[in-house]
Image (cartoon, helix red, strand yellow):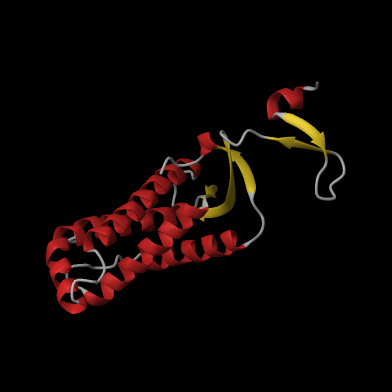
Length: 179
């Protein structure tokens, strides 16, 4: 048994047409992710969008009124406003946790570039969050989109491209957010 066997786990014959040896990493401590290059300015723009969302009235603040409207429109068979508010809260929480971890991976300085590890659920939550914020900005006077939104859109486009690719990496879960 070599040092790599001790460090990486069990080894065996190469798989899927790859000659050599493959290492089986413990699923409990390793995860498939998409490595993505991000700029510090994009992370700061995302932070500004989160702050703008926090400052504006939330759906959960008006869930009862919204539910009454749904009940009237759909004769009591419409969507559940509390469920919608919970999904929004969960998406926002995932984005906040990812952002906190990603900030640790990118050095300070506006032009600094770093690599973050994106889990599929994080990308989906970020996409949902940004879409909701854009819709709020278009429909509500109480919500103002930050001027840095194009930087968030650039980040989202890069994440979309990276998560659409078949390339994934395996990293230890200590490097990932705890959303």
